[in-house]
Image (spheres, chains in turn brown, orange):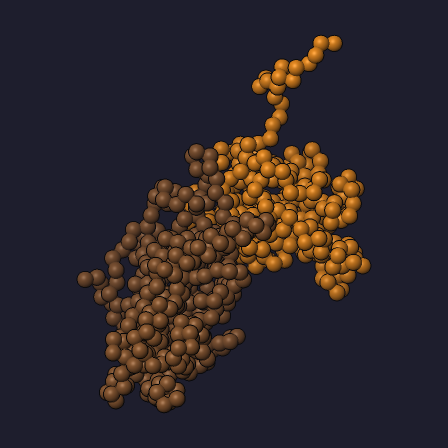
Length: 361
Length: 263
């Protein structure tokens, strides 16, 4: 059993970054995730593992520091909250185009614009449909507990390097701020410079001894070559969709109605399930752990098993519900429920929404 | 006269000059007469002479030199517009023993990337920035740059830069020289043999500062021509540069070994 600690989600994420063998963290403070860089600065990771922590002048700078660092084969990470993640979209698009493995954590808050500093899930479109320009995808992991804020850091790096693709950890202000018991994983050693040079032949950390040089770029002025590069990216995304869908199913075996919810909404919906079952309503929960790739096949299977309706519960005006609808493809009813602007729904509201919009609707 | 056989002439003992192998054989994408090619070559010669071929990572900008990575025969990264100093920071912080430099034009460094430039300088990142200033946006077809001179005509200042409306040319090199994080700040040109020699010495000094881990960033501005954007012949553009650019952007050292040079 690993070390047990009572921690905030943001602190667990920061501690996990050190333990995951991250080489560099570059970030800019923003509520409700500033504890990440505060924890890292206080913890002196340079003395623990040699990890570099740098406060950048903006989120624009920190994502580009990630570009440079990640492109050398080192493990580089940043975190921010919604408005800061918006600023990073240019860099994320370049990172995706240049196929650089990095990890970005978004502790989502209410929007649009400056919005507020309360928890929200209204960055789903930005995360899964591409907030930056061009045809690209981010691997997106959605923790629903402080434990997962820790566990998903090494997982995100594993996936990012496996596919040479940026990965995002998408939580919210509540998961980031709340304290829970967390079992920390043991220290993963940082790779040495020599190990990195031997392991990643694409990384730009100085020409190889045999004279080969590497270029990291997202540019190709020849449209036919850029089309080819795009098809290569699309083939990679297809492979990720086939192999990396992660989800959790709760009480789905006999369920007539399914709540689809991730992150904090999934936690709330678990309580709603208990209330619904107590009323004799056969409800189940499908929790996407990867927002992209989205668990489409699992929804199709549930439809085939005779599920009568789906309620997408999310702290947004209805974003993930579009992916649920695409998977259900009109075969049964799909509705959305969620409080927005930083307001968190109660389990009772979820129960009422399922009864009115799906069962009675 | 006997026939001359070229193979009898091409011999190692007859060699007086050759292209550095640190430049690729790819044909440069620059207009004939442009200073970019010379600036590229000087950097690559310095890297070769310092024996740092396997230990250097360059960062290319957006602008005419967006394809610098095709010509410089080392590991290179292509940055987003203006972001090269942040990208170089990310590299250098994690590979402190490697040589890291950015190569940026005036739009990239002094307009869209002003924040990244100033903060990399202010943090004293141990990198080299090579800044090519030709007072115009060459790649996009000759629009006004932050360094366009007052009254200078460009496609977005077709009646000349009106400083009341469009602001004044930005002397960003003098500006960053004021920051404690810069160690060596200098301005040169590459339009004559003597200017080329001086520029190369400055570039070499900048890289040596980095290798010797001198405290701060080394910044070399090269005032260059843009004969296509200025709509002149290469020769006329160099004369115009001497008569108009140099009086505004004075050549010479601005800060040496962390101390401002008295003028």
